[in-house]
Amino acid sequence: MKKIVFILIGLLSLIQLRAQSITEKWPELKTFHQVMSTTFHPAEEGNFKPIRERSGEMMDKATALADSKIPDGFATEGIKDAVKRLKADSKKLHELVKSGKADDKELFKALNALHDVFHEIVGLCRKENEHH
Image (cartoon, rainbow, N blue to C red; front, side, top):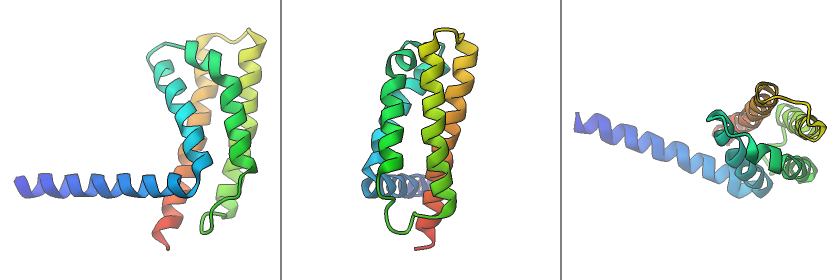
């Protein structure tokens, strides 16, 4: 049993190290994630104040990410496409917030879709990282 626990801890540590290496290579991805995590997780619990206050910042971070140089080894068409969608979807989310007409359900749907695109990017980066 102890052996299984140690193996699981080792695997989780490896996954964490890989995630860290992606954000170390691409600081704009890390900066975007910081805003995403501080807005998405409260929204999951019904607190939409953070996303309503920080949607413009999230849009700016997504734009900075899209305008940044994608690190060597990660500049695949799939990642480029996902980054473009992240930028466009963050702008749509911000416009939704600015309109003042979105209810929490509609706002969470847009935020959740943006969160999914972020995780798509991270997943594609991990996949590319495994090939190197």
